[in-house]
Image 1: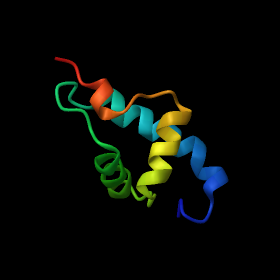
Image 2: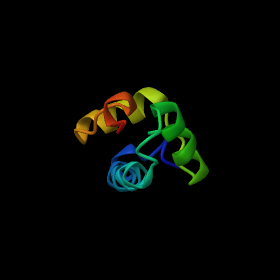
Image 3: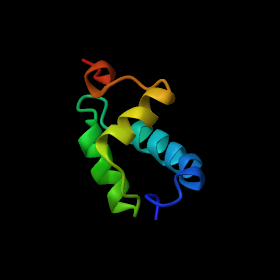
Image 4: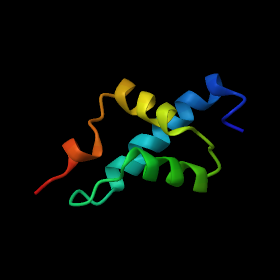
Length: 69
């Protein structure tokens, strides 16, 4: 699982995270908690703070900042 092999998982998680965020509803972007749930549904168990760290490492703004009005 992603919890054990963080080194291997990082590349996969990064790609998944970018894909999820690219496909999200721009009027209602996903919170980090929702991103955790989406990744968990694909079999990657991560803490919210880990998702936040990865999101920041990818220079992806928070859901509030990604919202388009």
